[in-house]
Structures are given as structure tokens and as C-alpha cells.
Length: 277
Image 1: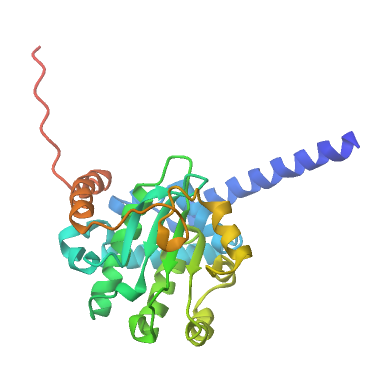
Image 2 (image 1 turned 60 degrees about the vertical axis):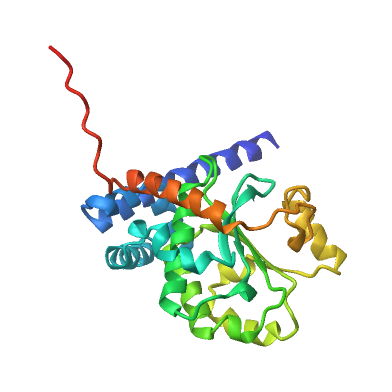
């Protein structure tokens, strides 16, 4: 019995060492980096790309290179609040001021609150929120939770093109960032939409989608398992009467833009006073 336990521990150490070796192999494979790409490619990031491709170094390398190419042209770290603020006026997408029971950052989506028609601007807003949410993650967390309220939703709120590109951005450029996505109160017509959208999702992402129906005790129990009802908003079955306040949220985002710029070294550093000799 003790020998089996020892072997299990040894296997775990072997797996951990093997994964560390693959991280090193991936770093060598992608070659020298500079600027924001160097800042982006921490061991933790490389690990997520390897995880997304089942620790296949070659497939992970291809995926990571595509992301680095995308980031070099899209420049997500340079998007600022004033560029996307209009998209957020109705509170259709924002970072919540509460966490789940594991302390993970929560992103709230309310597609029925759609207030614009520009596909490109909507995606830019999504990327901004993702980048901000990642920098806001607690030090011991790497993943986020997504709460999507489908109350009042209709097919006109979510064009297939936008849904497909949203899935592509999340899966290809932010792998292993989503812990779970709760699809709350989807109307019956959503079933038709989902039959199309699910083909855009890789198997791992598909399994992270949890349908929550307010009148179903079992699905609501899942919400209680993940959230303290005192912090969960009423529209998701909780007791918190909090409402999205665009003016207050804007102030917070403007302040956090400075933190983002500092993280990516995109702002001029304040000159330090010379020390007298």
C-alpha cells in the first residue's frame, strides 16, 4: 500500500518535471522575443498554451505564434477606455466588482443590452475587458468566470459573425483563461442559435458552458455552489441589488488604464531626482 502511494508521488513529480521541460522547449522553439511579446510570454502563459494543445510543443508553438502575430497588429494592450466607453454605456459587458467563491474575477455579459452595431468596435470592447480582467486577477488565480444573462435576448442581439469571432478570440488568444461560463435564463429560441455556435467551440470550451434556468432547482444549486448569494446580483438569482453604473465604472477604468500602461511599459517614466554625491 505504501509502495503504491510512493509510486504515485513519483509519477506526479515526473509529470511536473516533464511539463517544466516542455515549457523550456516551447520557449526555445519560439526564439528570441522583445518588447510586449517578451512581457507576454511568461512561463505561466506558455503553460496555458501547452495545456490548450495537450502539451504538444509543436502545436502549442503554432498557436502561440498566431497570438503573437495577432497582438502585434491588434495591439490589445494599447486599447484605452475612451476608445470603447460607448460600447459599455448600457452595461452589456463589464468586469464585475465581486468574485466567485474561489476568488476569481467575474465578467458579466448582458447581450440583450446591445447598444451598437459595429462588429469591430464590439470585439475591441471585448478584448479591452479581457485584458483589464486579466490584470485584475488575484495573484493566486489565472482563470476568470463569465456570467451571461440572456434575459430579453433575441437573435438580433448576437449576429453569428460576432459570436464566431468572439469564440475565436477567447479560444485562440486567451487559452485556459475561462474557468466556467454560466448561460443564465436562455430563451427557447437560443437553442437554435446554440446549435450553430457550439461548432465554433473546441471541446474544452464547450464543456465549460453551463446552462442555468431560474426555475430549475438543480441548475440554481450550481450557482449557489459557485457564488455567495449575498454578492451575486439579483438578475442572476442572487440577493445583491447592485446595478451597473456607467459613470462610476468609467472612473475606475480610466484609473486602471494607467496601471495597464505601466505594466506594459507604455508610459513615460517619471524622471528620478539625482542623488547628491
